[in-house]
Amino acid sequence: MYLVTMLGNLLIILAISSDTHLHTPMYFFLANLSFIDTCFTCTIVPKVLENIQTQHHTISYTGCLVQMYVFMALTLLDDFLLAVMAYDRYVAICLPLHYTMTMQPQRCLLLVATSWLCSQFLAFSLTLQMAQFSFCASHSIPHFFCDLIPLLKLACSDTHIFQATMFIEAALSGVVPLTCVLVSYAYIIHTILRVSSAGGKYKVFSTCGCHLTMVTLFYGTLFLVYFQPSSSYSADTGMLASVIYTMVTPMLNPFIYCLRNRDMKDALWKLLGWGKCSTL
Ligand SMILES: *[C@@H]1O[C@H](CO)[C@@H](O)[C@H](O)[C@H]1NC(C)=O
Image (cartoon, rainbow, N blue to C red; front, side, top):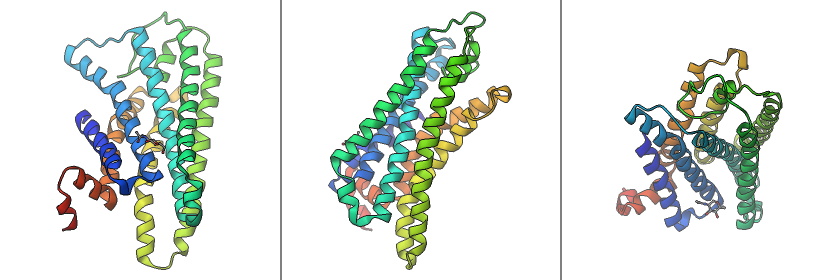
């Protein structure tokens, strides 16, 4: 699965950068998303594989904090970028005449840069607080990587401020992007319903369908893990959902895009040197 994820996402980045037809904001964001997914799996899976191989289920304290930081920053970035992509689709479908003006390259770069900064800041503030806790009772994490909640349960310092920060950050980084996605799609659906031809509807839906599938997978699994009351937090459900969003979702993203999107398929064939096949 790790190899498929790496290969699939790297192929997407290569296909997008090599095909000038795909040098549009939507595909730049998709390339960013693939890049993040690649980094994301790299922070978790190699360590898991090493643990399985050596049967030493240990991680250093620094390693644990770094893993938590990178994991959080990339998850938040994924979250913000999905919202940016929804906004991009909204402008493309509902305000097509303003698209080139609204989605200028500098504007896109600004959106991506802001997402980076926000996610780094949010992840950094939580990691800094976590680094000040003492872990005195047990050092054993019932999880396959250093996730926030299992680590928090081990801390024996006062975690109230941390929990409040975590709650505010979760609310902000959950509610704001999700609202952006939902509002964008409400407008998009409204516009689709007014398109009279079935062919037009299908075309609009084929680009949004991919993005909507990714959004559903991403938020669905995140809600499963982080939005259960902490009293009923079950390590098993949490772990299963974590496997899905750390390993399965990043692996599926390339397939969601490449199997359903004609332009991506053509670019991939071209990249692999089978350009003629796409005309069959
Ligand atoms: C990410 O998006 C920006 C802005 O659209 C773009 O300039 C950059 O090339 C993208 N990065 C990757 C790795 O595709």
